[in-house]
Length: 53
Image: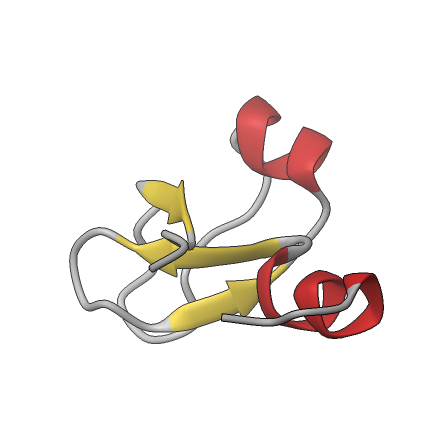
């Protein structure tokens, strides 16, 4: 896990994962909530945030 804010922002800010094919997408959070962003691989709109481990 990142120890400083710049690395933490690069790893976790505005990054979402497709629930169907598990691909990573960088997008604006408000567009994802509104349903305007879809996955590039499978065209699904079911996205979740990246989990911090």
